[in-house]
Image 1 (cartoon, helix red, strand yellow):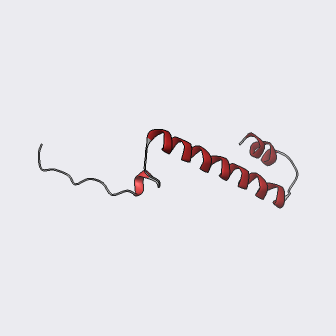
Image 2 (cartoon, helix red, strand yellow; image 1 turned 45 degrees about the vertical axis):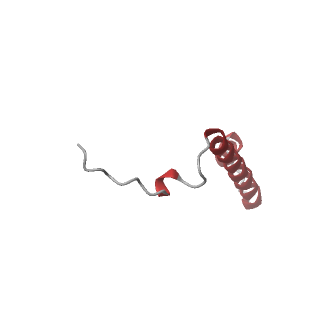
Length: 59
């Protein structure tokens, strides 16, 4: 992320360099999320996309 910030603040406009930075950041993010999910024994996918349990009538 720091490299991406420096790139954006710089005057250079290099689409290939930016694409390479994005690919590295995406791979790092994917690896991090995978490791966290494994550590916490969470299923794959975004939690907000999983169905919610039924709401009970007990109040």
